Structure formats: C-alpha cells, structure tokens
Length: 113
Image (cartoon, rainbow, N blue to C red; front, side):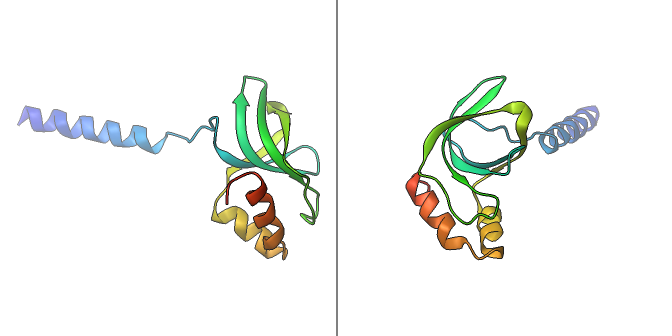
C-alpha cells in the first residue's frame, strides 16, 4: 500500500512539472516576431544568443501590406514584445486584415510553405 501511495505522489509531481514547461525557440523554428519597432518579422531562426535572436526573415510594415525579400537580421532580446511560431494564429491575423495572400507569398519565400 505504501508503494501505491509513493507512486501516486510521484505521478502527481511529474504531471505538474509537465504543465509548467514552456516551449523555447530554437534554431530552425519558423516564427514571427514583433519588436519595439512598428515591423513584424517572419522567418526561420538561424542563431540564438543571450542578447539576440537572428533569423532569415521577411519584414512586414505596420499595416501588413507588403514585405521585404528574406534577409538575415538580428533582433535584440530586449526589444522583442511578441514571439510566436508560424501556425494558424498567424494566418488568422493576416486573414483578419485581408492580407492572407501576402503572408503566403512571404512564407513561400522563406521556405515555410
């Protein structure tokens, strides 16, 4: 009976640990980043240091109307206000402002689509 009690406590602790784990970006991830500038960066992470995240990215203007060709760029960690992985949330963001076609062209340019 004592073993079952210990097993129950172990399972409870291990399940609570899994709930607190956050996803950490890594090289090769496809992300979009908002920073303290009015631009949105969409691309693949190429390097991460304590101070910067570097990616091969397209840059969107404030209205998501147009984007640059993919270029290598680095963004200081202190200026990042939002980092999300490219997924349906991002597609919904662009659909909401009628820019899904622009997003699809940009993602194709960086090899995500």
